[in-house]
Amino acid sequence: MVTELLARAGFAAARAESLPGDASKRYARLHGGPRPALLMETPGQDYLDAFLRVARHLDAIGVPAPAVLAEAPGAALVEDLGPQSMADALDAGADPVPLYAAAARTLAKLHGAPPPDGLPAWDVPRMTEAAMATFLDWWWPAVFGTPPDDAMRAGLRAALTEMLAPFAAEGFVHRDYFPANLVPTARGMAVIDFQDAARGHPFYDLVSLVEDARRDVSAAAREAALRAYGGTPDAAAMAALGAQRHLRVAALWVRLDRRDGKPHYLAHGPRCWAHLARALEHPATAPLRRFLDAHVPPRLRGNPA
Image (cartoon, rainbow, N blue to C red; front, side, top):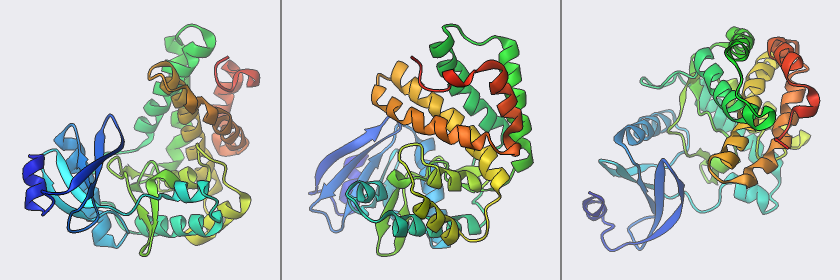
């Protein structure tokens, strides 16, 4: 299938350079073809279908993203936007203010259009279960030595549900809108890795950008992003959605360490817990704050010892 795809698109003689991937996809940069392109191979058609659905949507609304050049079952040729992501540019010392402003302008455009049909829900039940799956199944036993009981699970589910319920929405959510998934281009800030997009509250993406789990965001860059996004973000929604995300991701690093043998992710733990602590200061997060105050003393709110 891949050989036929490459030949059909004029890349039969191209040399493939393998790029880092993950369990859900493999990428190769193609050299010597008619235009810069990447070969993306996926383990299942569902993943590819989700990618193509969102790619068509982004093209229709004018959001910069890799163009799909050709496709076949389990594989696609996509436009190569270049080797430097926004994260790479920041690591190389680029001024973060214009980059974050550009990222927020793209995000505003993304959120300004109705989401495409067929996206899964990123609603209150799914957000609640996602946070419980990392926090209770991985962080909790790593810290306390035993799994939480049913009452503890019910308590956290109730707290998260109560906190998130006022902020249910049906907009487009990328779900991982942060610099590693953004690419500066002449057309503006382009979006990649969008196959997990869903229907939910758009401010989830805004939190992902300005309260990044993987890097510190300066006050100036945050302010530039919020101005470029437009309007005044709802502080209550930002706090509640942020609290869910920061709790989930702080515990996700523990899963990556314990299950996947990737302890370097734990370096991001203190940042996530600090984000969570700030979110818990807002009245909108009171249900989660009460649960944590009752069961997780502040001295334990961090990476497992």
